[in-house]
Image 1 (tube, rainbow, N blue to C red):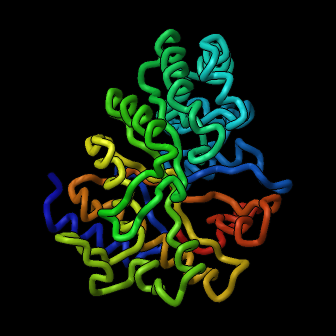
Image 2: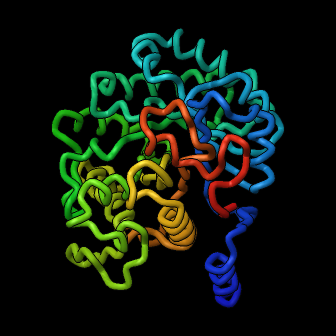
Amino acid sequence: MVPKFAQLFVSTLLLLTPLLSLADGRDIGVCYGLNGDNLPSPNEVINLYKRCQIDNIRIYQPYPEVLEALRGSGISVTIGPRNEDIASFATSQDAANDWVNANIVPYADDIVFRWITIGNEVIPGPLGSNVPAAMNNIRNALDSAGISLAKVTTVLPGTALAASYPPSAGAFGSDITETMTGIAAILAQEDTPLLINVYPYFAYSSDPSHISAQYAMFTSTAPVVIDGSFQYFNLFDAMVDAFNAALEKINFGNVKVAVAETGWPTVGNEPYTSVANAQTYNRNLLNHVTQNGTPRRPDYIMPTFFFEMFNEDLKGNSVEQNFGFFYPSMQPVYPFW
């Protein structure tokens, strides 16, 4: 157990210094997207992760050049197939075996694979019903290959919830309840979290008359939402706990959640986007998730991935292009790591 004086010292450092070492075992990662035509080489990127002491990386498909750069890095990897491949995995064990043998097995001696994400925001949607069977078949393929540490899961958007306010009302849509029950059963068996994307920025920027900047950016000093015995000082916790409540409603409250993406853009929708807002949100989020659970899960320190490492100029609009901690030049957008 860390002595209280040490916890206070660390907390003070988090508040006072913009340059933060993550070499203390906290469960923080950063997503690495490649939707840019001016990004540094994968070797340069992985070296940047190591210099910043970021121990977890999420990539969105198995880019061989990225996996080669990750060999021997010590960075824990969360990775998934392309969404369009999920249906074939659901219907064919051979297809699942082929994917694992091509994209995981050749690197497994040199890379720690943590989570294999079967579907990125495909639920709700036409591909969603394939996810439980695809997860099972990928899990079978991993077991056959002797890769026991990598666990299968999926990544949900906020739209997977038919209700989310107040958080205790959180519930999956009736059209996906059967799918989510199947997924949760697999996750419970493997003691693996459900991954969710959590973006207070989008909620705040779309409804600033009802959602305050303070609630969105962790700066409220009084509870904003009181939900029975639970008090919510920030929107992030409320959004996460809506998923916890939804899992409880399908009798899988024992399944934990982890955050696959969260972040704040610096450009594209002023005044909601700014360097100051992004820095405030991400700094306060980091302080929060490394020290606190949510009101509904107060003792659970949640693994969290920030979105994202670089600005990506091939994304669809200016907001989407500007979530990065770094420019493609590898210069920081603002001091953080």
